[in-house]
Image 1 (cartoon, rainbow, N blue to C red):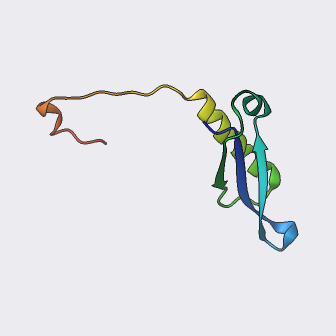
Image 2: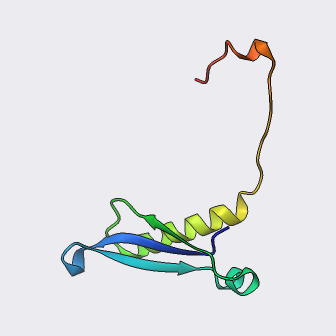
Length: 82
């Protein structure tokens, strides 16, 4: 799991150039060490929104830990999603 995110966003105060917002979970870094990932916040033009996007990624990876695994027999082949 990642505990630090470098979020790329567009800064209107800097000539619409790409800026980077670093978002970290300091408790997780102290416990597990630093594990950084990067993300692009498409359409994001504020530092606050970029920060919230980074927090969302960190919290999602931290809290969503359950997975589902299942199998079906041949009767499941004729069904399609939707």
